[in-house]
Image 1 (tube, rainbow, N blue to C red):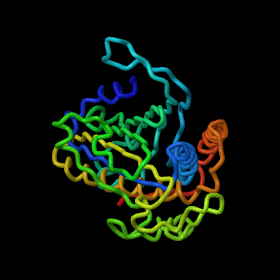
Image 2: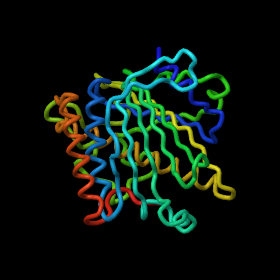
Image 3: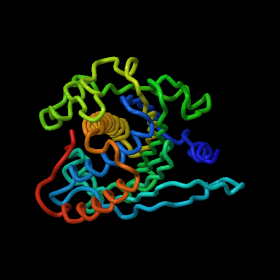
Length: 289
């Protein structure tokens, strides 16, 4: 199918890091589609203010021709292009090295759910800094071993890490800024669905249950900083995935029952809100470690 060809078009051998995160949630694949989009809209507002945050440039349906394919096959997706304005949200040593105006990240995403592809880049770094994310959403407890159809050489390079949203101390304790009791899956119970108070191992007993398989391909070329920056990227990726998916579940009573038309209207309003919020108030959300 066309979406698999898009996956194959990404040459993963060019990347230094190939890491697959698996995040299970007690919901169906179809429910997560709505919950994820709702979560992105809300989380964007939580990360915007004080001259920093997210600018939505484009959000529209597109039909794309897959590059490099002589057959000219096409696929349909919801395409988004965002600019993420950063100042305090990058490590200080990078801020000191980077020239004025270069601290922004460009995000392009092709959402052909249940497959999604996202690319992050920085105009100043050009092709020296590229982060690709391929996501597949599948029913089950996250035990599909090669959901991204990687060839043997990339499969051997890939590192798999599970993220347990029910465990507040998973990998390392949450800091006070990031922890909210109302966004703790171990303490939250949904009024609409009855799901909640998640305990370790919930993916083996919950019905329904699904898994996000997120494959990160990271390329960073800057002499003397490569390993350090790659580690920072992976640390922040973990924090983002852990916190975001905890929110998606704990916000289920807000988005459960919404239709895709409701989500598109929410996204349009969010775009206007972000434009108004970006240059007002204080910096919000995750800060650099």
